[in-house]
Amino acid sequence: MSEFQTTRLGDITTKVGSGSTPRGGESAYQSEGIPLIRSMNVHFDGFRRDGLAFLNAAQAAALKNVEVRANDVLLNITGASIGRVTSAPTEMDGARVNQHVCIIRPDDRLESSFLRWFLASPSQQRLINGIESGATRQALTKEKILDFEIPLPAVDQQREIVAELEKQFSRLDEAVANLQRVKANLKRYKASVLKDAVEGRLVPTEAELARREGCSFETGEQLLQRILETRCISWIGRGKFKTPDALETMGLLELPSGWAWTSVEQIAEVISGLTKNPTRESLPLKLPYLRVANVYANELRLDDMAEIGVADNELQKLMVLKNDLLVVEGNGSPDQIGRVAKWDGSISPCVHQNHLIKVRAVIAEPDWMLNWLISPGGRKQIELVSSSTTGLHTLSSGKVGHLPVPLPPVAEQQRIVSEVDRRLSLIRRVETEVDTNLKRAERLRAATLQKSFGVGRLGGD
Image: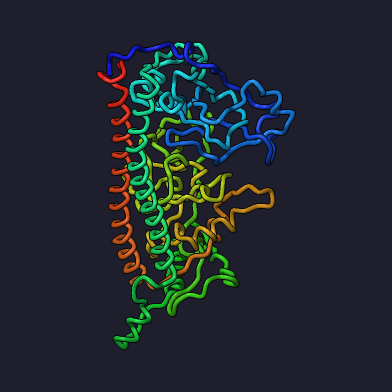
Protein backbone atom coordinates (compact mmCIF):
# COMPACT_ATOMS: atom_id res chain seq x y z
CA MET A 1 0.00 0.00 0.00
CA SER A 2 3.04 2.25 -0.13
CA GLU A 3 1.81 3.54 -3.49
CA PHE A 4 -0.86 5.70 -1.83
CA GLN A 5 -0.10 9.37 -1.91
CA THR A 6 0.10 11.43 1.26
CA THR A 7 -1.81 14.65 1.65
CA ARG A 8 -1.47 17.62 3.96
CA LEU A 9 -4.10 17.32 6.71
CA GLY A 10 -5.13 20.95 6.30
CA ASP A 11 -6.18 20.18 2.72
CA ILE A 12 -8.61 17.39 3.67
CA THR A 13 -10.31 18.86 6.75
CA THR A 14 -13.16 21.28 7.25
CA LYS A 15 -12.16 22.24 10.80
CA VAL A 16 -9.07 22.17 13.00
CA GLY A 17 -9.15 24.11 16.25
CA SER A 18 -9.05 24.07 20.06
CA GLY A 19 -11.13 25.93 22.61
CA SER A 20 -10.57 27.59 25.97
CA THR A 21 -11.56 27.46 29.63
CA PRO A 22 -14.38 29.76 30.78
CA ARG A 23 -13.37 32.72 32.94
CA GLY A 24 -13.07 31.53 36.53
CA GLY A 25 -11.60 28.16 35.60
CA GLU A 26 -12.93 25.04 37.28
CA SER A 27 -14.95 27.08 39.76
CA ALA A 28 -17.08 28.29 36.83
CA TYR A 29 -18.06 24.77 35.72
CA GLN A 30 -21.67 23.68 36.09
CA SER A 31 -23.08 20.45 37.52
CA GLU A 32 -25.04 19.93 34.29
CA GLY A 33 -25.50 21.57 30.92
CA ILE A 34 -23.38 21.45 27.75
CA PRO A 35 -20.32 19.16 28.11
CA LEU A 36 -16.81 20.66 28.00
CA ILE A 37 -14.32 18.04 26.84
CA ARG A 38 -10.88 18.16 28.47
CA SER A 39 -7.68 16.17 27.95
CA MET A 40 -8.65 13.76 30.76
CA ASN A 41 -11.59 12.60 28.62
CA VAL A 42 -9.47 11.74 25.56
CA HIS A 43 -7.74 8.35 25.59
CA PHE A 44 -6.38 5.98 22.97
CA ASP A 45 -8.88 3.32 23.99
CA GLY A 46 -11.86 5.65 23.67
CA PHE A 47 -13.71 8.59 25.17
CA ARG A 48 -14.04 8.63 28.98
CA ARG A 49 -16.78 10.54 30.75
CA ASP A 50 -14.93 10.59 34.10
CA GLY A 51 -14.27 14.20 35.09
CA LEU A 52 -16.44 15.62 32.31
CA ALA A 53 -17.16 19.32 32.94
CA PHE A 54 -20.32 21.22 31.97
CA LEU A 55 -21.09 24.76 30.78
CA ASN A 56 -24.20 26.89 30.94
CA ALA A 57 -25.73 28.35 27.78
CA ALA A 58 -23.78 31.63 27.96
CA GLN A 59 -20.44 29.90 28.50
CA ALA A 60 -21.14 27.50 25.64
CA ALA A 61 -22.15 30.35 23.32
CA ALA A 62 -18.72 31.93 23.88
CA LEU A 63 -17.19 28.69 22.56
CA LYS A 64 -19.58 28.23 19.66
CA ASN A 65 -16.64 28.09 17.21
CA VAL A 66 -15.41 24.85 18.84
CA GLU A 67 -18.64 22.93 18.86
CA VAL A 68 -18.09 19.18 18.60
CA ARG A 69 -19.87 16.93 16.15
CA ALA A 70 -20.23 13.18 16.53
CA ASN A 71 -17.18 11.34 15.12
CA ASP A 72 -14.91 14.40 15.18
CA VAL A 73 -11.34 13.37 15.91
CA LEU A 74 -10.21 14.73 19.30
CA LEU A 75 -6.46 15.20 19.80
CA ASN A 76 -4.72 16.24 23.02
CA ILE A 77 -2.25 18.99 22.15
CA THR A 78 -0.48 19.91 25.41
CA GLY A 79 1.14 18.42 28.49
CA ALA A 80 1.86 14.85 29.49
CA SER A 81 -1.11 13.48 27.50
CA ILE A 82 -0.05 15.12 24.22
CA GLY A 83 -0.91 12.91 21.26
CA ARG A 84 -3.73 10.97 22.91
CA VAL A 85 -6.48 10.72 20.34
CA THR A 86 -10.01 9.35 20.01
CA SER A 87 -13.30 9.97 18.22
CA ALA A 88 -16.16 11.99 19.72
CA PRO A 89 -19.05 9.65 20.59
CA THR A 90 -22.57 10.43 19.42
CA GLU A 91 -23.67 11.71 22.83
CA MET A 92 -20.96 14.40 22.70
CA ASP A 93 -22.53 16.04 19.64
CA GLY A 94 -22.85 19.73 20.57
CA ALA A 95 -20.15 19.62 23.27
CA ARG A 96 -17.23 22.08 23.44
CA VAL A 97 -13.50 21.54 23.97
CA ASN A 98 -11.01 23.44 26.10
CA GLN A 99 -7.60 24.73 25.03
CA HIS A 100 -5.87 21.40 25.60
CA VAL A 101 -7.98 19.49 23.05
CA CYS A 102 -8.11 20.02 19.30
CA ILE A 103 -11.10 19.17 17.10
CA ILE A 104 -10.13 17.70 13.71
CA ARG A 105 -13.04 17.32 11.29
CA PRO A 106 -12.17 15.51 8.02
CA ASP A 107 -13.94 16.21 4.75
CA ASP A 108 -15.64 13.43 2.77
CA ARG A 109 -12.32 12.14 1.36
CA LEU A 110 -11.05 11.04 4.76
CA GLU A 111 -12.78 8.66 7.17
CA SER A 112 -12.73 9.95 10.75
CA SER A 113 -11.85 6.53 12.22
CA PHE A 114 -9.05 6.08 9.68
CA LEU A 115 -7.54 9.42 10.76
CA ARG A 116 -7.96 8.54 14.45
CA TRP A 117 -6.07 5.27 14.11
CA PHE A 118 -3.40 6.80 11.91
CA LEU A 119 -2.72 9.52 14.50
CA ALA A 120 -2.49 6.80 17.17
CA SER A 121 0.07 4.78 15.18
CA PRO A 122 3.62 4.53 16.59
CA SER A 123 5.23 6.43 13.71
CA GLN A 124 2.81 9.35 14.02
CA GLN A 125 3.09 9.37 17.83
CA ARG A 126 6.87 9.61 17.51
CA LEU A 127 6.38 12.58 15.22
CA ILE A 128 3.92 14.25 17.60
CA ASN A 129 6.15 13.75 20.63
CA GLY A 130 9.13 15.06 18.71
CA ILE A 131 7.45 18.41 18.12
CA GLU A 132 8.01 20.93 20.87
CA SER A 133 6.87 24.51 21.04
CA GLY A 134 6.01 26.84 23.88
CA ALA A 135 8.34 28.10 26.57
CA THR A 136 7.44 25.75 29.40
CA ARG A 137 5.57 22.74 28.08
CA GLN A 138 5.29 20.54 25.07
CA ALA A 139 2.49 21.62 22.73
CA LEU A 140 1.13 21.09 19.25
CA THR A 141 0.18 24.23 17.36
CA LYS A 142 -2.61 24.42 14.81
CA GLU A 143 -0.03 25.04 12.08
CA LYS A 144 1.84 21.86 12.95
CA ILE A 145 -1.37 19.84 12.89
CA LEU A 146 -2.43 21.29 9.55
CA ASP A 147 0.94 20.25 8.10
CA PHE A 148 0.63 16.57 9.13
CA GLU A 149 1.13 14.32 6.12
CA ILE A 150 -1.80 11.89 5.94
CA PRO A 151 -1.97 8.81 3.67
CA LEU A 152 -5.07 8.93 1.48
CA PRO A 153 -6.23 5.62 -0.03
CA ALA A 154 -9.73 5.44 -1.45
CA VAL A 155 -12.53 5.79 1.10
CA ASP A 156 -13.60 2.15 0.63
CA GLN A 157 -10.06 1.01 1.38
CA GLN A 158 -9.90 3.28 4.41
CA ARG A 159 -13.07 1.63 5.73
CA GLU A 160 -11.64 -1.80 5.03
CA ILE A 161 -8.48 -1.01 7.03
CA VAL A 162 -10.52 0.42 9.91
CA ALA A 163 -12.84 -2.60 9.98
CA GLU A 164 -9.88 -4.99 10.23
CA LEU A 165 -8.22 -2.89 12.93
CA GLU A 166 -11.37 -2.66 15.00
CA LYS A 167 -12.00 -6.41 14.68
CA GLN A 168 -8.55 -7.13 16.07
CA PHE A 169 -8.82 -4.44 18.74
CA SER A 170 -12.21 -5.79 19.83
CA ARG A 171 -10.57 -9.12 20.67
CA LEU A 172 -7.69 -7.33 22.34
CA ASP A 173 -10.05 -5.12 24.37
CA GLU A 174 -11.90 -8.21 25.61
CA ALA A 175 -8.61 -9.76 26.73
CA VAL A 176 -7.56 -6.53 28.47
CA ALA A 177 -10.94 -6.26 30.20
CA ASN A 178 -10.51 -9.82 31.52
CA LEU A 179 -7.05 -8.96 32.83
CA GLN A 180 -8.39 -5.82 34.51
CA ARG A 181 -11.08 -7.92 36.18
CA VAL A 182 -8.38 -10.26 37.48
CA LYS A 183 -6.51 -7.23 38.91
CA ALA A 184 -9.67 -5.99 40.63
CA ASN A 185 -10.32 -9.46 42.08
CA LEU A 186 -6.73 -9.67 43.34
CA LYS A 187 -7.15 -6.31 45.07
CA ARG A 188 -10.33 -7.53 46.77
CA TYR A 189 -8.65 -10.80 47.74
CA LYS A 190 -5.71 -8.93 49.24
CA ALA A 191 -8.08 -6.80 51.33
CA SER A 192 -9.89 -9.97 52.41
CA VAL A 193 -6.63 -11.67 53.46
CA LEU A 194 -5.63 -8.64 55.56
CA LYS A 195 -9.10 -8.34 57.08
CA ASP A 196 -9.12 -12.01 58.09
CA ALA A 197 -5.57 -11.69 59.42
CA VAL A 198 -6.26 -8.80 61.80
CA GLU A 199 -9.58 -10.27 62.95
CA GLY A 200 -8.08 -13.63 63.94
CA ARG A 201 -9.56 -15.76 61.15
CA LEU A 202 -6.48 -16.57 59.07
CA VAL A 203 -4.68 -19.08 61.32
CA PRO A 204 -5.62 -20.93 64.53
CA THR A 205 -5.48 -18.57 67.50
CA GLU A 206 -3.14 -19.15 70.41
CA ALA A 207 -6.18 -19.64 72.64
CA GLU A 208 -7.50 -22.43 70.37
CA LEU A 209 -4.11 -24.19 70.30
CA ALA A 210 -3.77 -23.89 74.09
CA ARG A 211 -7.19 -25.48 74.62
CA ARG A 212 -6.32 -28.37 72.28
CA GLU A 213 -2.97 -29.00 73.94
CA GLY A 214 -4.09 -28.23 77.50
CA CYS A 215 -1.41 -25.62 78.12
CA SER A 216 -1.24 -21.96 79.04
CA PHE A 217 -0.03 -19.04 76.92
CA GLU A 218 0.85 -15.37 77.26
CA THR A 219 -2.25 -13.39 76.33
CA GLY A 220 -2.25 -10.10 74.47
CA GLU A 221 -3.05 -8.29 77.72
CA GLN A 222 -0.07 -9.93 79.47
CA LEU A 223 2.13 -9.13 76.47
CA LEU A 224 1.07 -5.49 76.66
CA GLN A 225 2.09 -5.31 80.33
CA ARG A 226 5.45 -6.93 79.50
CA ILE A 227 6.02 -4.38 76.71
CA LEU A 228 5.27 -1.46 79.02
CA GLU A 229 7.61 -2.87 81.69
CA THR A 230 10.35 -3.39 79.10
CA ARG A 231 9.94 0.17 77.84
CA CYS A 232 10.11 1.53 81.38
CA ILE A 233 13.39 -0.31 82.04
CA SER A 234 14.93 0.71 78.71
CA TRP A 235 13.99 4.33 79.40
CA ILE A 236 16.44 4.57 82.31
CA GLY A 237 18.80 7.47 81.69
CA ARG A 238 16.22 9.39 79.67
CA GLY A 239 14.17 10.61 82.63
CA LYS A 240 10.95 9.09 83.95
CA PHE A 241 9.02 6.92 81.53
CA LYS A 242 5.46 8.20 81.08
CA THR A 243 3.09 5.30 80.57
CA PRO A 244 0.79 6.10 77.63
CA ASP A 245 -2.87 6.47 78.47
CA ALA A 246 -5.02 3.36 78.23
CA LEU A 247 -6.97 3.06 74.98
CA GLU A 248 -10.67 3.81 74.84
CA THR A 249 -12.07 0.63 73.27
CA MET A 250 -15.73 1.64 72.96
CA GLY A 251 -16.89 1.10 69.38
CA LEU A 252 -13.91 -1.06 68.44
CA LEU A 253 -14.22 -4.56 67.01
CA GLU A 254 -14.64 -7.45 69.47
CA LEU A 255 -11.37 -9.36 69.43
CA PRO A 256 -10.68 -13.11 69.53
CA SER A 257 -9.96 -14.75 72.88
CA GLY A 258 -6.45 -13.98 74.07
CA TRP A 259 -6.15 -10.69 72.12
CA ALA A 260 -6.16 -7.16 73.55
CA TRP A 261 -6.66 -3.68 72.19
CA THR A 262 -3.72 -1.34 72.60
CA SER A 263 -2.48 1.84 70.93
CA VAL A 264 0.54 2.50 68.74
CA GLU A 265 2.16 4.67 71.44
CA GLN A 266 1.82 1.90 74.05
CA ILE A 267 3.75 -0.70 72.05
CA ALA A 268 6.06 1.50 69.96
CA GLU A 269 8.05 4.72 69.98
CA VAL A 270 6.46 7.35 67.73
CA ILE A 271 9.04 9.84 66.45
CA SER A 272 8.78 12.91 64.22
CA GLY A 273 11.46 13.69 61.63
CA LEU A 274 13.62 16.65 60.70
CA THR A 275 12.44 19.91 59.17
CA LYS A 276 14.27 21.13 56.10
CA ASN A 277 15.68 24.66 56.44
CA PRO A 278 18.57 26.72 54.98
CA THR A 279 20.79 26.29 58.06
CA ARG A 280 21.16 22.59 57.30
CA GLU A 281 23.17 23.40 54.17
CA SER A 282 26.08 24.53 56.36
CA LEU A 283 26.18 21.38 58.49
CA PRO A 284 29.20 19.20 57.62
CA LEU A 285 27.39 15.84 58.03
CA LYS A 286 25.17 15.12 55.03
CA LEU A 287 23.00 12.01 55.09
CA PRO A 288 20.38 10.47 52.79
CA TYR A 289 16.89 11.25 54.02
CA LEU A 290 13.51 9.72 53.33
CA ARG A 291 10.65 11.88 52.08
CA VAL A 292 6.96 11.35 51.41
CA ALA A 293 7.85 10.58 47.77
CA ASN A 294 9.77 7.50 48.95
CA VAL A 295 6.94 5.88 50.94
CA TYR A 296 3.87 4.23 49.45
CA ALA A 297 1.41 1.63 50.70
CA ASN A 298 3.67 -1.23 51.83
CA GLU A 299 6.22 -0.11 49.24
CA LEU A 300 9.47 1.88 49.25
CA ARG A 301 10.59 3.79 46.14
CA LEU A 302 14.21 4.72 46.62
CA ASP A 303 15.32 5.67 43.10
CA ASP A 304 15.11 9.38 43.99
CA MET A 305 16.87 9.94 47.31
CA ALA A 306 17.98 13.33 48.58
CA GLU A 307 20.64 14.33 51.13
CA ILE A 308 20.37 16.79 54.00
CA GLY A 309 22.57 18.25 56.71
CA VAL A 310 22.16 16.64 60.14
CA ALA A 311 23.54 17.82 63.50
CA ASP A 312 25.33 15.25 65.66
CA ASN A 313 22.85 15.67 68.53
CA GLU A 314 19.94 14.82 66.20
CA LEU A 315 21.26 11.48 64.99
CA GLN A 316 19.88 9.26 67.73
CA LYS A 317 16.36 10.57 67.19
CA LEU A 318 16.39 10.81 63.39
CA MET A 319 18.17 7.62 62.34
CA VAL A 320 15.91 5.13 60.61
CA LEU A 321 16.60 1.53 61.59
CA LYS A 322 15.68 -1.65 59.78
CA ASN A 323 12.05 -2.68 60.53
CA ASP A 324 10.98 0.85 61.51
CA LEU A 325 7.57 1.74 60.08
CA LEU A 326 7.25 5.02 58.18
CA VAL A 327 3.83 6.69 58.11
CA VAL A 328 3.03 9.53 55.71
CA GLU A 329 1.82 12.71 57.43
CA GLY A 330 0.41 15.88 55.85
CA ASN A 331 -2.70 17.12 54.09
CA GLY A 332 -4.25 14.99 51.39
CA SER A 333 -7.06 12.73 50.33
CA PRO A 334 -8.17 9.96 52.70
CA ASP A 335 -6.79 7.22 50.42
CA GLN A 336 -3.30 8.77 50.29
CA ILE A 337 -2.69 10.04 53.81
CA GLY A 338 -1.28 7.51 56.25
CA ARG A 339 0.53 5.45 53.65
CA VAL A 340 2.87 3.15 55.55
CA ALA A 341 5.86 1.00 54.65
CA LYS A 342 8.55 -0.87 56.58
CA TRP A 343 12.12 0.39 56.26
CA ASP A 344 14.32 -2.32 54.73
CA GLY A 345 17.67 -0.95 55.92
CA SER A 346 19.02 -0.83 52.36
CA ILE A 347 20.55 2.62 52.93
CA SER A 348 22.48 3.19 56.13
CA PRO A 349 22.83 5.62 57.79
CA CYS A 350 19.57 7.28 56.79
CA VAL A 351 17.24 9.85 58.39
CA HIS A 352 13.67 10.96 57.72
CA GLN A 353 11.83 14.23 57.16
CA ASN A 354 9.13 15.66 59.44
CA HIS A 355 6.35 14.61 57.04
CA LEU A 356 7.18 10.98 57.77
CA ILE A 357 6.34 9.66 61.23
CA LYS A 358 8.59 6.86 62.42
CA VAL A 359 7.10 4.00 64.45
CA ARG A 360 9.57 1.67 66.19
CA ALA A 361 7.85 -1.39 67.67
CA VAL A 362 8.87 -2.82 71.06
CA ILE A 363 8.72 -6.67 71.21
CA ALA A 364 5.57 -6.76 69.04
CA GLU A 365 6.14 -7.83 65.41
CA PRO A 366 6.55 -4.71 63.20
CA ASP A 367 5.02 -6.68 60.32
CA TRP A 368 1.96 -7.34 62.45
CA MET A 369 1.47 -3.62 63.01
CA LEU A 370 2.13 -2.96 59.29
CA ASN A 371 -0.53 -5.52 58.29
CA TRP A 372 -3.01 -3.87 60.64
CA LEU A 373 -2.33 -0.35 59.34
CA ILE A 374 -2.78 -1.39 55.68
CA SER A 375 -5.83 -3.57 56.37
CA PRO A 376 -9.36 -2.22 55.78
CA GLY A 377 -9.87 -1.88 59.54
CA GLY A 378 -6.58 -0.08 60.07
CA ARG A 379 -7.23 2.25 57.12
CA LYS A 380 -10.61 3.13 58.62
CA GLN A 381 -8.97 4.09 61.92
CA ILE A 382 -6.39 6.24 60.10
CA GLU A 383 -9.16 8.05 58.22
CA LEU A 384 -11.08 8.59 61.46
CA VAL A 385 -8.18 10.17 63.35
CA SER A 386 -6.97 12.18 60.34
CA SER A 387 -10.31 13.76 59.46
CA SER A 388 -11.06 17.36 60.38
CA THR A 389 -13.96 19.78 60.28
CA THR A 390 -12.35 21.65 57.36
CA GLY A 391 -12.49 18.57 55.12
CA LEU A 392 -8.69 18.25 55.06
CA HIS A 393 -7.04 15.07 56.26
CA THR A 394 -3.94 15.43 58.38
CA LEU A 395 -1.86 13.20 60.62
CA SER A 396 0.59 14.04 63.37
CA SER A 397 2.79 11.98 65.66
CA GLY A 398 0.15 12.39 68.37
CA LYS A 399 -2.65 11.11 66.12
CA VAL A 400 -0.55 8.16 64.96
CA GLY A 401 0.32 7.37 68.58
CA HIS A 402 -3.37 7.21 69.49
CA LEU A 403 -4.27 4.79 66.70
CA PRO A 404 -5.79 1.58 68.10
CA VAL A 405 -3.99 -1.70 67.36
CA PRO A 406 -5.25 -5.24 68.08
CA LEU A 407 -2.55 -7.20 69.95
CA PRO A 408 -2.46 -11.02 69.69
CA PRO A 409 0.13 -13.13 71.52
CA VAL A 410 3.61 -12.93 69.93
CA ALA A 411 3.60 -16.50 68.60
CA GLU A 412 0.22 -15.88 66.97
CA GLN A 413 1.47 -12.62 65.45
CA GLN A 414 4.34 -14.54 63.90
CA ARG A 415 2.07 -17.23 62.45
CA ILE A 416 -0.30 -14.63 61.03
CA VAL A 417 2.54 -12.59 59.51
CA SER A 418 4.00 -15.72 57.92
CA GLU A 419 0.64 -16.70 56.37
CA VAL A 420 -0.05 -13.15 55.15
CA ASP A 421 3.40 -13.06 53.55
CA ARG A 422 2.73 -16.37 51.81
CA ARG A 423 -0.62 -15.28 50.42
CA LEU A 424 0.47 -11.78 49.44
CA SER A 425 3.51 -13.27 47.69
CA LEU A 426 1.15 -15.37 45.56
CA ILE A 427 -0.96 -12.28 44.84
CA ARG A 428 2.13 -10.31 43.79
CA ARG A 429 3.21 -13.13 41.50
CA VAL A 430 -0.17 -13.17 39.74
CA GLU A 431 -0.23 -9.36 39.62
CA THR A 432 3.16 -9.40 37.89
CA GLU A 433 1.87 -11.87 35.31
CA VAL A 434 -1.23 -9.75 34.73
CA ASP A 435 0.82 -6.57 34.33
CA THR A 436 3.16 -8.36 31.93
CA ASN A 437 0.20 -9.44 29.81
CA LEU A 438 -1.31 -5.95 29.89
CA LYS A 439 1.98 -4.53 28.60
CA ARG A 440 2.07 -7.28 25.98
CA ALA A 441 -1.43 -6.24 24.88
CA GLU A 442 -0.29 -2.63 24.51
CA ARG A 443 2.70 -3.74 22.43
CA LEU A 444 0.41 -5.86 20.27
CA ARG A 445 -1.92 -2.89 19.76
CA ALA A 446 1.03 -0.72 18.72
CA ALA A 447 2.39 -3.45 16.45
CA THR A 448 -1.02 -3.81 14.78
CA LEU A 449 -1.16 -0.08 14.09
CA GLN A 450 2.43 -0.05 12.89
CA LYS A 451 1.69 -2.90 10.52
CA SER A 452 -1.25 -0.97 9.10
CA PHE A 453 0.38 2.45 8.91
CA GLY A 454 4.14 1.81 9.04
CA VAL A 455 6.87 1.22 6.50
CA GLY A 456 5.68 -0.41 3.31
CA ARG A 457 2.00 0.18 4.14
CA LEU A 458 0.84 3.76 4.05
CA GLY A 459 4.09 5.63 3.58
CA GLY A 460 5.13 5.85 7.26
CA ASP A 461 8.70 6.51 8.40
